[in-house]
Image 1 (cartoon, one colour):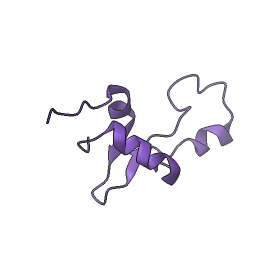
Image 2 (cartoon, one colour):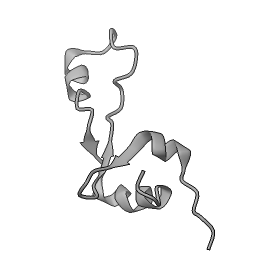
Image 3 (cartoon, one colour):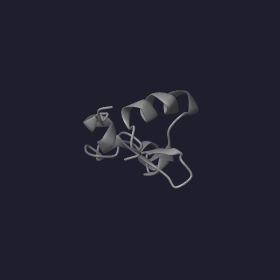
Amino acid sequence: MPKLKTNQAAKKRYSYTATGKVKRTKANRRHRLATKTKRQKTNGKIMNAYADKTCESGIKKLLPYGN
């Protein structure tokens, strides 16, 4: 059986925790922060959020080896 390919875009966006949850980074925190309100910046402050349960099975298909 050949090896499965890991999706490179998903590898950069998601990772697994030790318990198997899918960890992700919140959006809108990279650039152009001067134009955003304080509320927008504090809401996006959480760097380690968890992926939604409905999306988790699809992400696990993209990352077959637990990257």
